[in-house]
Image 1 (tube, rainbow, N blue to C red):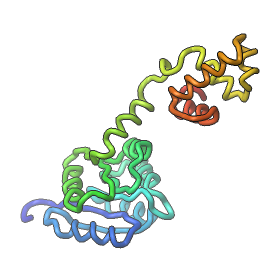
Image 2 (image 1 turned 120 degrees about the vertical axis):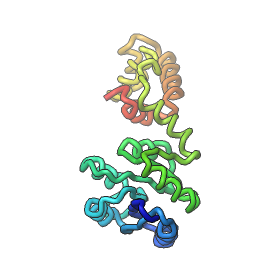
Image 3 (image 1 turned 90 degrees about the vertical axis):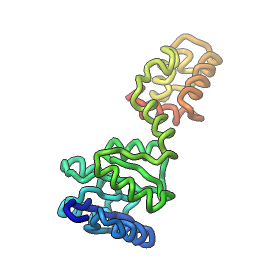
Image 4 (image 1 turned 90 degrees about the horizontal axis):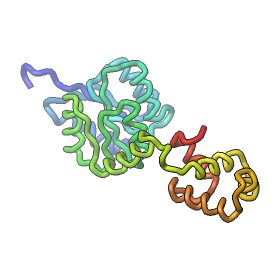
Length: 214
């Protein structure tokens, strides 16, 4: 591309066959320049700091230092490198964490090489690109984490939840709140359904994750 600066790209991928396929696709694009590649997170972070590529393709399941830690370091060091995550794990919490740490794109490893290259170009232009299959899950996770949760549980359900977290049994909770054991069970059943969990321990963990209790 005469007269135009090429987009510098770095590939951090643990799987050698996939890494080679992506690297070949990057090299085949006249508007890209492959500046480096690594199969572990520690090497990737060191080379990204040294090479300052415009875009890094990053597998989150890297040995030594995982991809989320690499993302965290890039964000902490205020590097201008924009990151596109390539991951076999597209769970909504994983996507959320990656984007919160500054990822500009998230693709699954089912993405075609053409899609990966097009995403690199888009991210280099300042766009954010998400695979369609992760978008709905991300929306759910955003609603769970970012929207106010206080109205999710009733005041009484919150009281029951806090006492569960304190280790009280059903009868003890009833005695503390001056309600019957059957009423306690009704409140527990309701809060489990609202938190989308199956037992009391999971309810406490989920409530802590959502910021309902500390």
